[in-house]
Each structure stands twice: as C-alpha cells, then as structure tokens.
Image 1 (spheres, rainbow, N blue to C red):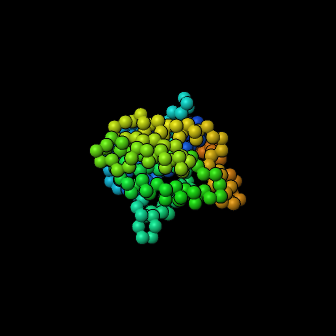
Image 2: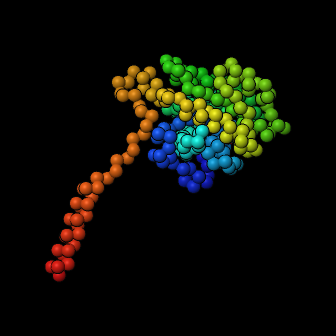
Image 3: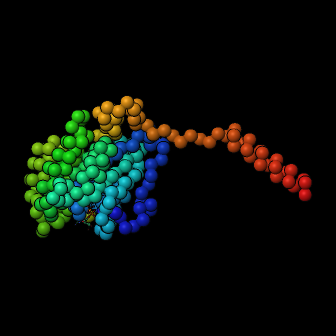
Length: 247
Ligand SMILES: Nc1nc2c(ncn2[C@@H]2O[C@H](COP(=O)(O)OP(=O)(O)OP(=O)(O)O)[C@@H](O)[C@H]2O)c(=O)[nH]1
C-alpha cells in the first residue's frame, strides 16, 4: 500500500557518506493487506500509520545505524500478491524485485490463512529466480499478532514453515510493537552489512553478463571543475565591467 501522507516528509534518501557508500536492498513480499507497508514504515520511521492506499510498488530509502555505522538501506514494498487463474498476480514485478534485492522479507498475516498459504509459492518464486546462484537471506514475518481474537494461523505454524523453508521467523505486530519489527529488520541488515560481496554482484555473475561485477560502492558525484568555474566567472565579471565603462 502507498502511504497517503506525503512520503517526502518521512523518507530520508541516503547521503553518500554512509558505510563506504554501501546500500542494502530489501524486497518485502506477501499477500494483499497483510501489513507490508505498515511494517516497512514502522521500521523506517518508528511510526504506525493505519491508513494506506493500495501499493503499486514503492521504494523507500533511509540510513540506519548498524553496529555504530551508518548504512543506507532501500526497501521495495511490492504489490500485494493474489492467486488467480493465471498464477500469481503482479508476478513479473515481484520477480524483478526479488532479482534486485540483497535480502527478502516474506510477510503473512496471522488473521489470514490464504496469506499464509501464499508464502510457499512466494518462496518458490525466490528459488526460481535464484536457481543458479546462492539465494539471498530470507526472513518470514507473521504480522498482526495483536489481533488474537481473529487469529486464523496457529502460533506453531509459522515457525514450522520457516524451518521447512530454511529461513528465520518472527511473529510481530506493526501496530503494537516497534521493537519486534525493528529487531527483525535490524538483524537482517546486520547480517547483510557483514557480508563482503553483495548478492547483486552475484546476480551479474550468474546472468553470464560480461559486464564488470557491480561494485558495492556507489560512485561519488563528480565535483564541478573549479578552475573552469573561476574562468567563466571572471569572463562574466569582465563583460559587466566593460558594459559599465561603456555607458
Ligand atoms: N491490528 C493491526 N493492523 C495492522 C497491522 N499491520 C497492518 N495493519 C492494518 O492492516 C491494513 C493493511 O496494511 P498495509 O500495510 O496497507 O498492508 P499491505 O500488505 O501493504 O497491503 P497491499 O498494499 O494491499 O499489499 C491497514 O489497515 C493497516 O492499518 C498490525 O500489526 N496490527
């Protein structure tokens, strides 16, 4: 879902000064209405804002502190997936987000059995995308833990599925508990920050691309040529002086 509030007020784009300019990229996948946007916004801003529009795929950027260092992270909030006659809705968009990401967060709602069933299919999609190279770290989040009265997925089902899929599991509530949400994302970021070679570099290698492996470093913008600027400034000044003296 897209945040109704103007995102520019809460999203901070990373400066070029953080953790050797390394950017950690996380894709968040799951069924519709499971709380993907709420979780991402909660993690990035500490705030829970209950009112969202449907998400068509927003990218959120921010710097976070990992082990005392500034790390730039980008989180791709993918559209809510549904199963239809042709397979999964928005499959191509979700697939390219998985391809882009260094890590994947899969989300279901404990109030929605269908969103839980969807997780295995989403995991299959990740496995397909990473069929010929190491898969990125994946965590499974069971959201809306506060809604005990309408719970449809039993507490033991989530950990069992995570074990079967080989990923970490966290039961969280975006609305009630910031520390759980922060803990889950933060641990994932810590793991990623420790890695020397980003998965995006693996992606280039696996695609057989001759292109040089993508560096984890983002090139700094070139500073303007000061000599050239000074020369042009002098030219303008001397033209002005000529104009004044000729009046
Ligand atoms: N009670 C409760 N409500 C939540 C929680 N997380 C999200 N919600 C609510 O669930 C609804 C859907 O949340 P979103 O974050 O928009 O879900 P989404 O997965 O991004 O939805 P799509 O854009 O349709 O894919 C909103 O009304 C949220 O306020 C939670 O932990 N507890």
